[in-house]
Length: 290
Image (cartoon, rainbow, N blue to C red; front, side):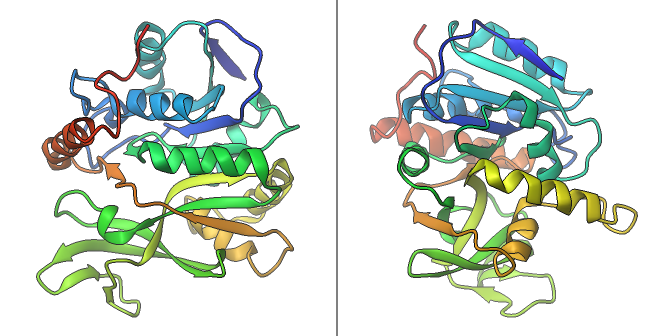
């Protein structure tokens, strides 16, 4: 069941599902609220600001019972009134596919919807591309980032590497323990190639989905053996269905930098990068103007 927040308004633009149910064990706090903005705004604040600027009218935030109440309180206090925002719980950590399904009852299933993480700042260009695609195309889609513009800090992270042919996603492979080293961008996960090209297209979980994909998600969760693998991620799910269904995934390349906060050590650099975006005129000084 969703928890409503704010005043409800007629919805004309696409919906956005923000995945905020992670426990952020590596960060050590509620990293969705990490003060990344120039005036202390949290990651999720700047994320919503970018989504609103791109025409998204309806935001559904997936939360967990532990940190969710703090996020609900924060949104109620700082986000603009008169926007349609709702909350829904993912009560078990079963991955991002299950998290999207937790939002299903809160979505208008007559139209496509976007999905994003709550701890990655994608940039306004990325959201504009996503919003435009959802408004004009019948295909599912992914906003693709260049690897060198999708790493913050020196500690290792996971990235979904993509093969794109004629603008369409043909393969996606989750690479783990990816970090910038003197040898280049290295994935220490036993897969080949170990060294990744700086312009490798990667997924940062900024997706656009048609409602027709939801039954496939439900089937994937029903068939998944959670005793063997506790989570099923969107990148893994999409990679599996690419050659099994007629669904097409368009890839929109963006030159935006994806500023993520995976570890606490990432925060100072992330704050600097946001300040640079503001100084370059790529985002406003304040997340919201009430």
